[in-house]
Amino acid sequence: MENSKRLFRAVFFLALFLCFTISIASAPRFCSIRFIGERLIPVKMTVEVADTDILRSRGLMFRRSLDPDGGILFVFDDDAPRSFWMKNTYLPLSIAYIGVDGTIHEIYDMEPLDISKTYPSVMPARYALEVHKGWFKRHGIVPGCRVVFDGCLGK
Image 1: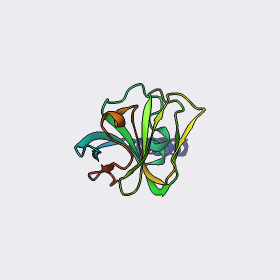
Image 2: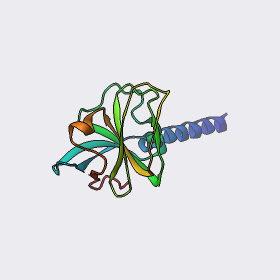
Image 3: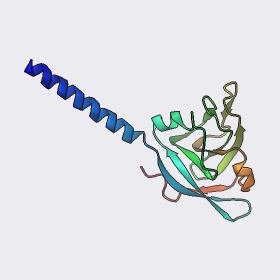
Image 4: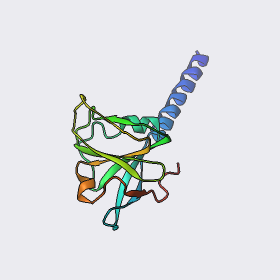
């Protein structure tokens, strides 16, 4: 009987430890980035960083709000063609695909909850940035503009 109690305690604390570790690994962090736009006036934004598989797969799904000048920066380990969709995403968004050098290659507007359409990048991208639909246009951010990550990319 004593051995089964010890085993139960060990399994319980291991499960608790794993839950705690997973929640820390999937907790988002925030940082500031700057855009150098066509107007040459830097535009600042605070973004949530999605740099793990768990955070990237969840993205902005199931959320009903996003800071008006906020976004989510998806960070990948390599340059590759990327594709996003709007499954379980309630907010109308714009997405920018960004190269390893910080240059925005493409920007697309995406419709909420529309799973019939995907938004693939034409060029390989290291980063993708989702913001409120129209945010890039309102701030003069177009393909060719640069993103300065200001130390956001260290884990």
